[in-house]
Length: 330
Image (cartoon, rainbow, N blue to C red; front, top):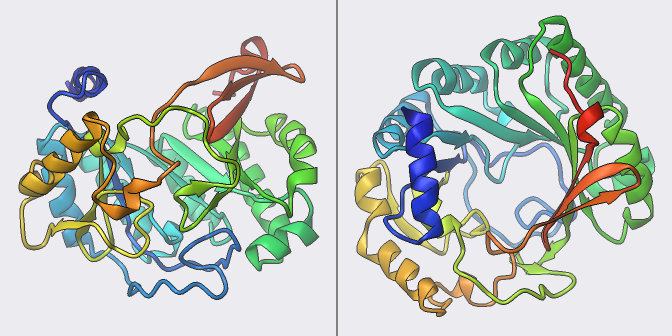
């Protein structure tokens, strides 16, 4: 039933009808153990002052109950922080998968992953797990992230793959992600060749500047309504609902789920006004949307690259082994 709702709501989104929230990006914490130079929130010298903290299990249960009641089906339990730093994160995953039956996918830097956590991820059949591995070589990795633990992250990825195979599972889909920037630009091709031989897919993201909403190379596509305003709820660790995951400074708070029902916020006058404005080609207010180049949607193209399948947008390039050799063990 939930899968049918997801398909129906996705069709509605394409026509910009009633905005069903098919996805929920839930910031269980905004605490992070990395200081990546491209991260607007945690990079050295960042002027963003939003308080840090952890969402409680009771808060999460309430939010997921309301999200499912609205027809939602996909949970992304991450935000500005490293989700596996949450002391009850496996309990959160268990709640989402076992109690609410949600599809779950997230990214991690992978440093703090313990074997028992990986076993839980496999047992729960978390749907997608991406590892942010932003360099090929340790020296470059340390420059970008401030961490010397590239070898440990790579070992954790190998361990997770081995556990998936040993348990005869097809989940999670395992990917690595890298943000292409001046520091690692010379490593990208070799990085893609290395990791596509190991994981299910590799995602190369373009670098974003100006608080994550602009691209280093200007986006060439004609601006369209941002799909996220119609299909994705963004909730920060303190319960604030914001318009976009790129709202690092909480400038677009639509309400707080501890004070109002999620349904009331999602279908609220302000959110509906922003949606109508975007459909009519007006992209501000809010001010963070005015010159944004990271809006969700746009053209996709499929091609081949170095004997790999490549799906390309102006924001990402996703590489996979050719379909006849891309069957995951399981």
